[in-house]
Length: 122
Image 1 (cartoon, rainbow, N blue to C red):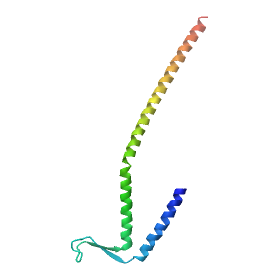
Image 2 (spheres, rainbow, N blue to C red):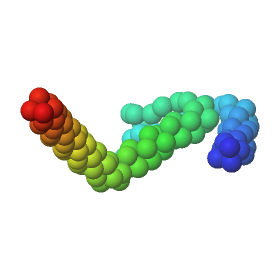
Image 3 (cartoon, rainbow, N blue to C red):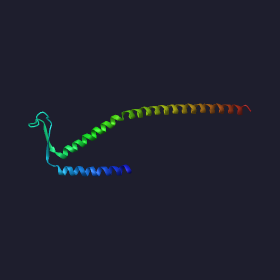
Image 4 (cartoon, rainbow, N blue to C red):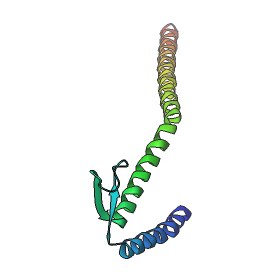
C-alpha cells in the first residue's frame, strides 16, 4: 500500500509537469542530425518540443529496463539452478518415500504370513 502511495506521489507531479511542458511548448523545433553542415542540413526533423521529451522518456525507460534486466542475469541464473536442485531433491525424497513404503508393506506381509502360520500351527 505504501508503495502505491509513493508511486502516486511521484507519478502525478511528473505527469503534471509533462502536460504543462507539452502545452507551453507546442511549437515545432528542428532537430538537426547533420553536425557537419548545420546551416544547410541534409538530415533534420521538425517535431513539437514535447515529442522530443516524450521520446527521451521512452528511450530512457527502455534503456533503464534493459540495463536492470542485464544486471539481474546472475540472480536469475542462480534461481534457475536452485530450482532445478530443489526438484532433484524432491524427486529423491519421493523415491526414498516410495522405497520405504514398499519395504514396510513387505514387512507387514511377512508378519501377516508368520502370524497366519502360527495360528494354523496351533
